Amino acid sequence: MSGSNANNNGFLYFLVGALLVGVIGFGVYYFTQDHSAKADLEISVGDDGIKVDGN
Image 1: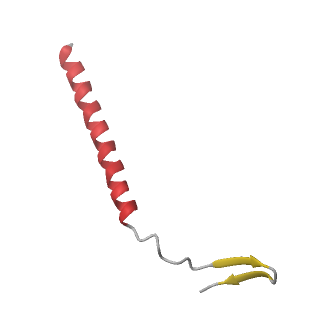
Image 2: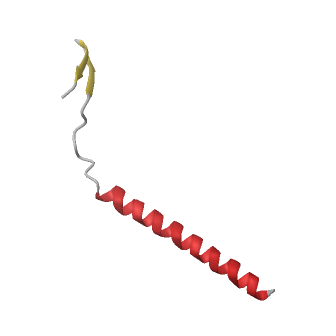
């Protein structure tokens, strides 16, 4: 009976570790991306009306 419990704990540790690796990997991917790039579409609203610049 204790062997089955050890197998369940091993699987739980594996699952938590896999989720942790996924979260860390996504964080590294997200924070290394260049978020300063200008958008392809710019919309501005002013006194003259609405301007749409499609770069």
